[in-house]
Length: 180
Image 1: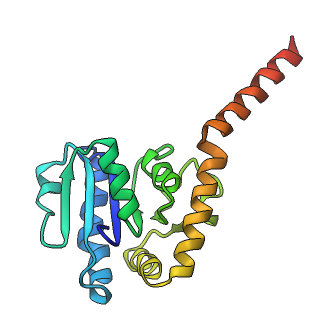
Image 2 (image 1 turned 180 degrees about the vertical axis):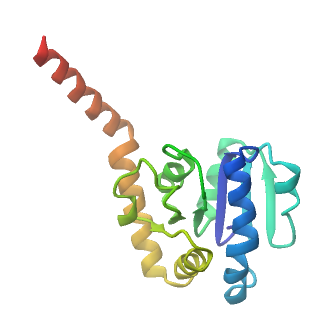
């Protein structure tokens, strides 16, 4: 959300992302805007459909594709990253990316798929009221925001950094050598 939070995807053409964007704007954000009427939402991702572009208004920005440097700038300015996926499968790069950037995350159980332990560092909620409440908490509670930022970044680093990859590859190679 610009100044407060964001919703970032690589592809706003993918049906699960279109559904998530619509649900976020129509069902979740009205609860947030009731308490925080100036919070801006940025839907960042390539190939937004006409339906997603139609969500743009005074408080909702739909960017289309942005370069990596611009995406990093937006993460640095965001207070919360929201990934409200209601269907889909596999590890969501957008979830890992937000955590790596130290942006506190609010997502769904679908958004957490493949990331065991994510519930310890991010808010996982599947209903609009609960998601809005988690966003509002991170907007209002600096201590909770700092804890979520640190914990999320540590979670991502322990699983997705170059060091974590190197350690996993070394373990794999040592295991294979032991079998030979």
